[in-house]
Length: 170
Image 1 (cartoon, rainbow, N blue to C red):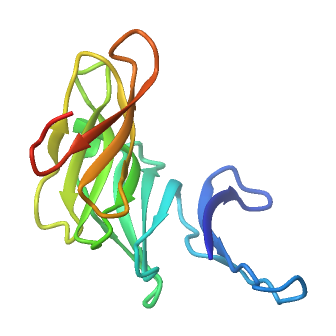
Image 2 (image 1 turned 180 degrees about the vertical axis):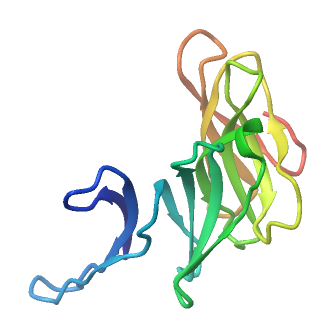
């Protein structure tokens, strides 16, 4: 499966979709619309077991940008973050053990983005793990879950950095 967002015919709000990928050229392809609401969805990311999709939701009410988790078995979404416009989340990625989600966010009073992590259960508040006076963006877990790779313009140019979770160091 591939998860993506698109605007349905005649709408101007993006929804969450998934499409199956056949193993052979003539395999049947299935397109499934997962959300159809008054919320613009973006940045979908499958959990390692492919049972969930974490994504960014921007309600039409403009009450801030939140992370939500879509359960592919039940067809329901639950909010992972509920902080309104205090923190504008984007670019989520699952940890390999599916226990955490890392993402970039910009605090309401800030001009740059930092890297945050949250427990995938949603029972904890997001915690900032990487901070600088520049933009730190697009975090991704390493396959073994020990590192987070991200981009930053802290040197004046966009570079790639590796953050070790155990030592909390670059």
